[in-house]
Image 1: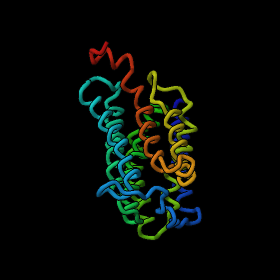
Image 2: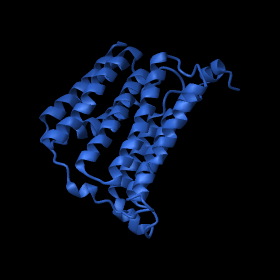
Image 3: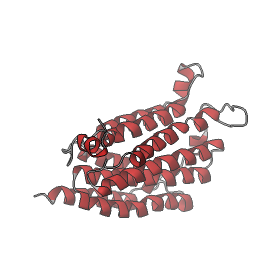
Length: 253
């Protein structure tokens, strides 16, 4: 019976692949690039949306510093590597999103999405390692590190956004299904917290102009999206750095 969750997880990934191949194509709406707050700050165009990506850099560097400065956090070396990979994806996402927001276009958005696909792959691999089995995590990581960039390539070459949308939103659905399983090691990564802040970030993104109007031009929804998503990163990995076993092994009191 212990193999049943692994088989179900693999079935979910296969279902996502099937949806990516069979669902009707989605074309990128070009109005996506028309963000509410386009004010420059000195030489920085679209300053709020560009510079708010510093939140990703702060979250990524904070997590990597915690890993490097304190040995023994991971109860399994693979989990430690996956957390580091996720945080590196967060750093790359911050840099790529800055690059995109300086001059929004499909070609620059492809760079942004390539970086995010790395983070998506690491999150799903961590879900497998933390809630299903560590041996499954490597399979998930290898498959999604290949399929994630492939979805971006498909969109960039054929304008079909469906595979990337399935990876992002289907991946969220898989997290929602499996995050309620007991963690293999306590306290476990905070997947519910990640889902909460991801949802808030997407809501802020959808209400970009409305939030900009309601705050009288103080902040836009897309700027808030970056900050909320970065907070979600910290909330997600925080338990990894607070495990009693990790503190004991690291000599942290």
